[in-house]
Length: 402
Image 1 (cartoon, rainbow, N blue to C red):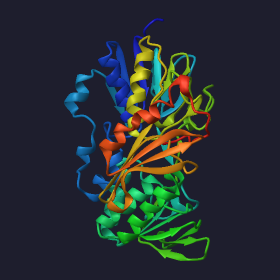
Image 2: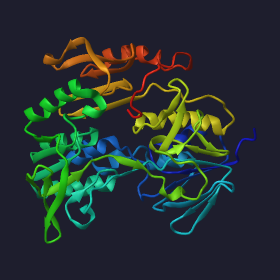
Image 3: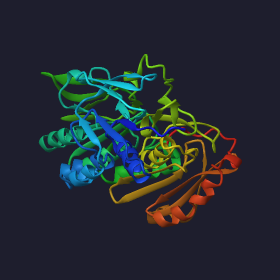
């Protein structure tokens, strides 16, 4: 294999930055370009719904690297210019400003785009939270109005609700699920999180769909549920999921199906790779495709992608990991916990606010979760790792996302 002389990374995200750094660390000395749609240098997304939203961090603290560290990569960063078309055969990317960028290898790291509710774009005060600018705009709005409705009971919605309560706002959390994070963690852990939010003063409207957003004079005034109840709001956060940012790849010839479809080495086509939230790759341990939306996955996946570009040949077979911080609770999970699994507390006690739980499906341990017990959960990680090697793939149907 001929090692590419020039590499283009499309997406100045944590995953895109990790690819650039891994390439340099692994010996690539050729041309390196990082293209980003946002004007900001690479920054960390997890703090957006917590430290940045609460005002504990200034925007610069979310930056992943200093200007000096980015300069040391000897890479060209082109920011504020989105990719709009990819020519796979030529490995050329056209940008919104009209630039044509060509490289011997292209890495797609464009992440996801938040889903929206019908009618929200016509109302001021309705927010999504994906970018640094989103977080800053939402914080400014929350400081001006006391009533917030969060639509969506997943990780992002729950974290925003917790942060807003910490800021003293009147918060209502609405969602289709029966409990907070029930789709990801099941009813037992979801029930514990639901009780946590209720104890902290969050109004809960779970198991009810949103019928419409209401407004007056172009500004949002509330959220009407399918039950007919109207939830008054000065601001609304829509956190109902996200879709892989693949629209710009239409006509490229790449296969797109809940992300950019890749092989076990994260290759989408000869000389074209995908990394992070946008990558749907074949996990050899599970024997099927997987797409994960979290920073840990993006950074770990970048190491394999960089190695593949430089001639390596190893599959990406991670043990998925994610965490969430809500109030004084830190949850860390390894593997693929799901609502379908049996859950057993094996250490600690939920009543004491510290415990470790195992998720099992078909007799196999598919997930380990720690609630304020990070070390104890990490020590049980091998229980999951043993079921995710190619020789021990579990014959179970588990969630495709951590």
